Length: 95
Image 1 (cartoon, helix red, strand yellow):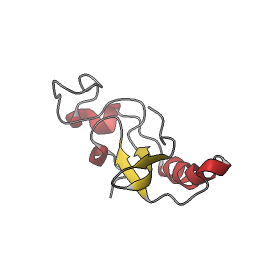
Image 2 (tube, rainbow, N blue to C red; image 1 turned 30 degrees about the horizontal axis):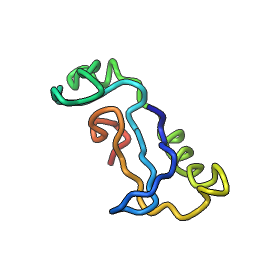
Image 3 (cartoon, rainbow, N blue to C red; image 1 turned 60 degrees about the vertical axis):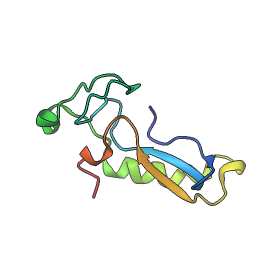
Image 4 (cartoon, one colour; image 1 turned 180 degrees about the horizontal axis):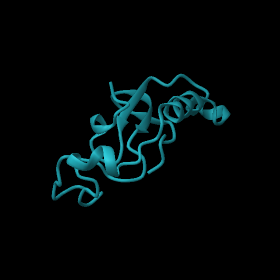
């Protein structure tokens, strides 16, 4: 999953982007049977040693450039959904 999704129209939230702050690997404290990402590769107890998170500058840059990709997306972004490859609050950059 890329860090930023293309801008899309959400019925509830309006013009929306999805922000994945977890990088390429799935990081989650659950292994739900219905999860399309499969089992967690990085265990929460090994998070600081085994995980490779995008740095904060990359996250800020990706969000800042999301509205300027093309004339169609230069409109107001109303919502940033923080989600991605597992549990986004596991990221050390999530405040």
